[in-house]
Length: 513
Image 1 (cartoon, one colour):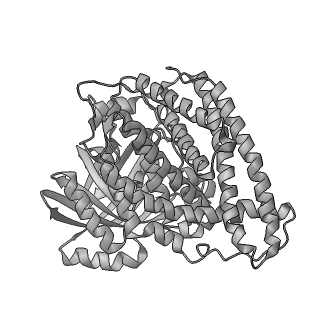
Image 2 (cartoon, one colour):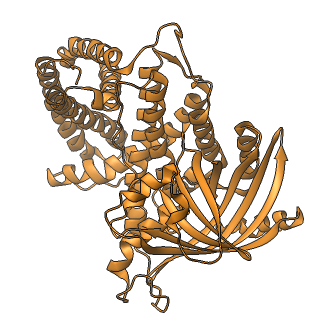
Image 3 (cartoon, helix red, strand yellow):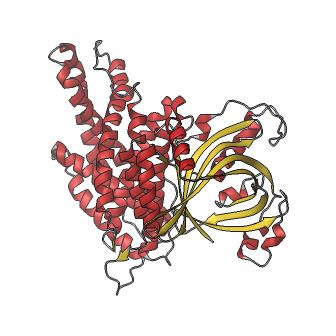
C-alpha cells in the first residue's frame, strides 16, 4: 500500500481553534499508543525503515514503512495483531523479509509514542483526504519530545486535491510544513536518550523526564550525498537531486520557524538562514542544469523562491557585518563607531518570516512540484543517459568560466557578482553528478572550485560591508578607516580570485567514472 501524506506542525496559538473546527465538522477521537523497534545500531532507521506495533483504540496493528518514490510517499504494510508483541514471521516470503533478515543485531524497543488523535475525512475536488490531528509525546528513556501535528493523507483521488486542501488549512491555521515523521524524531530521541537519561535502561518508564537537548535534535540540514547510477533516466536523476535540495530548504525553514524548541536556539539561526539560502541556490542550479534535457515547469516555484531568498539575504548580509567583518575591523584598529541597530536581531521577525503563510505556501508548491509526475524529456525520441551528457555540459561551463575568470581583476563588480553565481551553479551541478565522475579528477576539480568559491564569497562580503559602512562617514568620519581597510582587502581578494581561476583551468576536466 502506498501512503501519501503531508505533515504540518501546529503552532500553539492555533491549536484550540483548529481542534474546535475539527470537532465541529464531526471528527472522532482515537487514542494511539505505538512501540517502535530497531537495533542498537539503528539499522532500520539508516535505511529509512520504521517498524512499529500500535494500539488503535481497541485494536493492535503491526506496521512497517519503507521509502516511497518521492518525498510525499511511503510504502506501508499493515497486519492486525492480538497484542503489543512483534511478529516478524508475518513477513516470510515477502520483499520485507529480505530487509529484515540481514540485520546484524536483534530488534529491541527503541521509543514509544502516546497520542490523542482527532480523525476527519474530507473531500476536495475528486479526492478524499483524511485529516489526523495528533497531540502527545514521543518517549525514550528519560526524554520526552512533545508532539502536535496535523497529517493530511490521500485516501482516494489524485494529489492535486491533497495539496489544494493542505493549502487552505495552512493559510487558515498558520501551519508549518514538516517533513519529519514520528519515526525520524523518535530515532533522533533514542540516539540521545542514553546520554541524557538518569536511568540505565532507555525504556525505563519510571525515569524522570529530562530537559531536551534541542541543539542535537534540531541540527541544521546540510546538503546530503546524492547517488546517481548510469542506468537512471535523466528524469530519475533530476528527482534525486531535486529531492535533496528541497529537503534542505524545507527542513531548515521548519526549524527557523520556531517549531518545537527552536526558539531557544538563537545561536543556530545564522546556520538555518545560511542552509536555506544554499538549498535555494542548489535547487535553482538543479533546474538550470537539468532544464537542458527535461521540461520541469518550475517557473512558478522559482518566482516564489526569489522573494524568500532576497529576504533571507538581507538577514544574512547583516549577520556577515556583525559576526565576520566588524570583528576583523576592530582587530585591525578601527576607531569606535555607533552602528545602526539590527532590526532582525531580537524581535522575532525571522521566525515570523519562515512561519508566514506566504513562505509556507512556497514550500508546499516546491513539494508539489517535486511529486509532479508530468516531468517529461524535451526529446522523448532520444533517451539521454545522465553520465556522458552531464560531463559534456560541466566541462563546457568550466571553459566559459575560466575564460572570463582569468581576467577577473578587470571585471566590473556586477560582472564579478554574476561570475560568482555561475561558479556556485557549476559547483552544485558538479555535486549532483559527482557519483558518475572519475574520483581523482573530481577531487582535484572540487578543491579548485571550492577554493575559488570561498574567495569570491569573501570578496562579496567585503563589498556588502563597504555599502554598509560608507553612509556612516557623514556623521562619523572615523568610518573612513573601515572604507580604507575594506578597499585594500578587496584588491587582495580580486588578485587571489584571478589566481584561483588560473588554477581551475589547469586542474583538468571531468571524466566519466
